[in-house]
Length: 319
Image 1 (cartoon, one colour):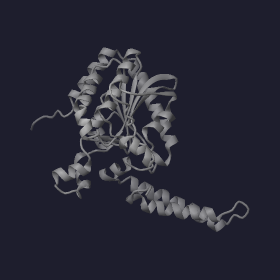
Image 2 (cartoon, rainbow, N blue to C red):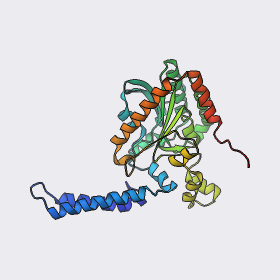
Image 3 (spheres, rainbow, N blue to C red):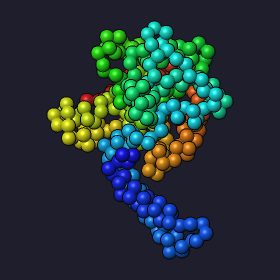
Image 4 (cartoon, rainbow, N blue to C red):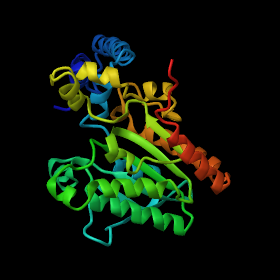
């Protein structure tokens, strides 16, 4: 099913419109049908605005995982030119859930590090559903150091349910690989922009998510734990996912209110998948503007600000 439960009324209207269009022919235009199509289009737009202006945190989480939502590799290829993928961690294997490589964004060389979920069932399995293993994070670290060596800014694209929790991953040092990435990112002498396009799941996302500026698409999420897991642990009931999502505040708007997000990139009405091209342009423009600003900053000041930024997270004053 390529639509969510709360999208069902919209999909039904869109189907009615498509059926009416199918009945129209270029040789014989029925004025009444044409008028009915316009009426339904207006009704559909009004309904979509009403639904999307009142989304709950859980509905936004569902939208962030939408089956038609563009994935990282499509984003990279759409916003950059001359992208060349780089493979392997030079230690164990090439983890395909992490995509890395060099490209140009408006003629500016950048290094991409992204989490890729895959599109088809076969590709999703090949990409391990976007859940990186230690070798994926070590590949990311190798590319970070390569970018530093050649003074190339880094763009990380985050879209993962979390780091892979399998036995093999633990045996090969999953937590060490994540911690080593954070340690490396804290001192990396190049500008770093983090972009969340879908799910930002816990430490698996944070392992490539420490940078100088955090951008999120409007209907992306970023959380320490999934709403399903939170519901099971805190409520001891898997059916309390909506309450868990609301309590955690996982949407871009809630996170910006907490001072964690710098830029929210607006999505088309209905979400990223409704008009990817429009969103790609917005992403490219925001990245270009931020890269120009960050590149003009003194690198020592940038690193100091980066560290202060993450040290301040979670600070509070007792009453």
